[in-house]
Image: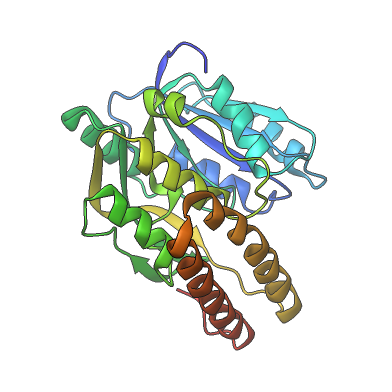
Length: 273
């Protein structure tokens, strides 16, 4: 990572998300910053849609008061590779990741940065809300436990993800300790990185409100099934990295039951929140 010159770098990895990317960028531009210096780094993982033209248009129309946008178009190597490129070039003292089809609440960056400054925490995160269009579908509160091992177990055993890695504001020092995303993982890379961050962080702070907005889709049955099967494949690899012995067996068994159950939810269009 380069020498710091800004407070926060918001990384947006994107692949064929031209329809949603402007909303993600706009949510950053409309955030409350106070005295924060923020940079926005869009890393395009080889999109074949209108993404380059969309970003170039946004950059041309940008005013001097907006958050500066950096943009790079890379070979299609997956989200992990795209994020790693940005991590290596980010200028911020703190890093957060925003998926191109999601959004940030207005006060998200300011709240997380303020808590980090007040406490000296290497990692600050909160809850998240799910949405579809302009309709909020549900909320996930951050875990009440503050023991790091318990948080990791929550990620491994909970039927629904109790928190989202993208709700995390990560210090530059912690990223240096943890390293890059695992580029072998085409799914589950966020959860894998969250576990590694929690394991290595010397101090963690939790904000008891939603600091991230996660988009839910209405997909066809075949698309849902394909995505779920792909998730299962890489989830086993992720679990094997972070467990061993009898615990690995238990987590793999429980993970199989959970994923089968989620496939049922997906099939009957019930799994939305």
